[in-house]
Amino acid sequence: MTTDLDQMQTDMLAAIDAASGLDALDAVRVQALGKTGVITTLLKSLGAMTPEERQAKGPAIHGLREAITAAIATRKAALERADLDARLARETIDMTLPAEPALVGSIHPVSQVMDELAEIFADLGFAVATGPEIEDDWHNFSALNIPETHPARAMHDTFYLAGEHERPIVLRTHTSPVQIRTMMTQAPPIRIIAPGRTYRSDSDATHTPMFHQVEGLVIDKGITLGHLKWTLETFLKAFFERDDVVLRLRPSYFPFTEPSAEVDVGFTVQNGKRVIGGGGDTENGGWMEVLGSGMVHPKVIAACGLDPDEWQGFAFGCGIDRLAMLKYGMDDLRPFFDGDLRWMKHYGFSCLDVPTLSAGVGA
Image (cartoon, rainbow, N blue to C red):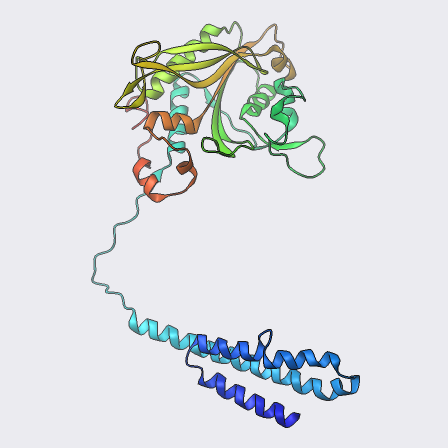
């Protein structure tokens, strides 16, 4: 058998040396070491041998495998090196050619709208507040007067994190927990907006599991619905850069506000598209819902350690992605998350054009 193995090794080494390319070398490897290869078959035969036979034949078979494996590795390295040398000789760079124009960065529409919101609300005396995207259910639900039987707490609506925790841990479903944390750590009066990423177990043509939201909160003495309506009207006129923005507040229900209102904005139809401004109950117009709002529920104020008889406030929230789509004429939500450079080039904004009220927030 030793003579047979010696001859087998000689033949295989010759085939390895004769391999003119990586494909040919791999064919030799499969023939020798593949699942049904010659050496693999010999190794499998050791199991059926007696201990004495294995002791006599095993070292020679293993030695054959090691020799062939090493020879294949050496030949592969040589072939790869030769291939690289050939490519280097073939592929040259003409250093006299003009350089390609540099890629110009741009601001994503979501970042652009966040900057616009910060600029508008800063002019109204609001600060920007942030908070963790991984929250406990008390800050995300309970402190906001959302009962344990509310559908939003169900796993088909909310992402829960596995593991043992003092309280259930979730990916925040809104930026409202930032309002709670602010009221618990900052003495009134409070005027903040809370932009950021939020997460819900929802994915279809008009929803994504991760989206962007901005919420606003005012806590002070003597706050009324009139303050809320004026703030929203001023914000939307500045954001859409139109003085003819018309609002309609419809009674609604949110656990964390009372009374609550959905806010519609008037639009007109121009060239088959909806354009914010004017409209409303007119022949060529209509109403479009853009955000939710209301007076902060006394239970929410009390949960944060404040006296609801002394302090009142209002809150509102809307989708940043939706605001971008309405303002800049985007009709599909999915490209926001695709990372398509062609879409970014079309809708992107110059990294040097910082939104300002004097130059226009959509500069």
